[in-house]
Amino acid sequence: MRHFAEYSKLFMEYLQIEKNVSPYTIQFYQKDLEIFFAFLKQELVQDLNDVDSRVVRVFLTNLYDEQLSRRSVSRKISSLRSFYKFMEREGITEGNPFVQLTLPKTNKPVPTFLYKEELEKLFDVSDTTKPLGQRNQALIETLYGTGIRVSECRGLRLGDIDFSIGTMFIRGKGRKERYVPFGRFAEIALETYINEGRAELLDKVNDKTDAVFLNARGKPLTERGISTILNKMVEDAAITVHVHPHKLRHTFATHMLNEGADLRIVQELLGHENLSSTQIYTHVTKDYLRDVYLKSHPRAKD
Image (tube, rainbow, N blue to C red; front, top):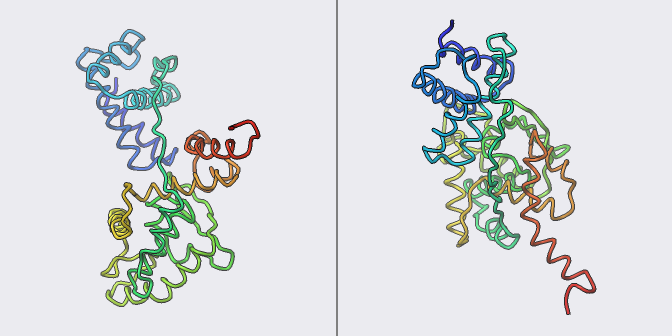
């Protein structure tokens, strides 16, 4: 019989090669399997086929005893269900003890977003006569104007931007690729920055790069660097709410839906694999829908 570590290695190779799962996600799978295998060793279970409903119940009890959140427990169950599905496919196990297990319901946090008045403060805070101000303006117009992730923004290259048709080529999660349009404000900010500010920043280094967004030393911006820039812009704009790069993505989706965009179009723009990931943004539009109702329905108010 193979050792548990060998099964884990087989599964990780499958996730990486066949499923194109990101290294970050693979780390979670690896950790979940390590916890499960440690539990099996503690319970003196030596074969994957010996895991039945009783063993699974004891495992779940241990997880809840550790006061893990429902979300964490759900992820571990999902990881083990996928693992056993792979083992079954490979003929290593004869069944999947996790297949009938109901995932505990999780409370999805409702994403917060910025109102238009708060956004206007951010758009007006940068000194666009200076290279860093031009970069900051292009950065926020890009994040809000396209809804791309901060990691996708960091990975943006000059050749990915097609000004002739107003689209960007985006390399998303799981190596998924998509084209995202951008509007006139982002176009102006990007052209100004690339032709002026970026060229000046690039003169500070010998090693040239085609990364769009650069730091003050002319090197490609990191995700942490983007967060730091945004925090400084928020501070300068005297905005009291907490703002992070992903909040601009939330804001993009919310404003698109508020203005009547089709949910599946927003899903495509955001690069969501499942529509359920996009549907969470419909919850934050309820206040907007209520306002429209109160203003529009003849018997909504006195």
